[in-house]
Image (tube, rainbow, N blue to C red; front, side, top):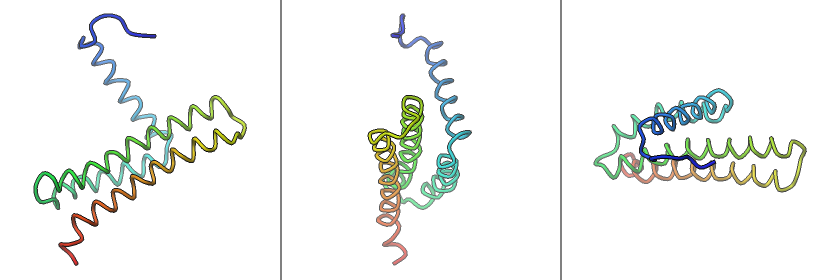
Length: 124
């Protein structure tokens, strides 16, 4: 249902913020993968900000990690909707879940690649 009224209303912005926090809490509460990736983020973001020389390196080390968390939440949302709509196994449901998982995997590969390209030359 589309909202009515001015879109920049501070009350609407506050509600959107609360819904976002609710989504983060749900991800933390119900998704073990999200918890693990969030804990890694707590370690890797400060490390990336400390190890990166200049803004571009810092972005290259931190941005992909935040993307992993975002896509993990989207993957969890896809899985929840698929489970709600089709609790029994269906090939398309399995494919949707596998593709969401593959998206998270590719971003994890991107994290490793970025860290290796930025930090590898300094240590090898």
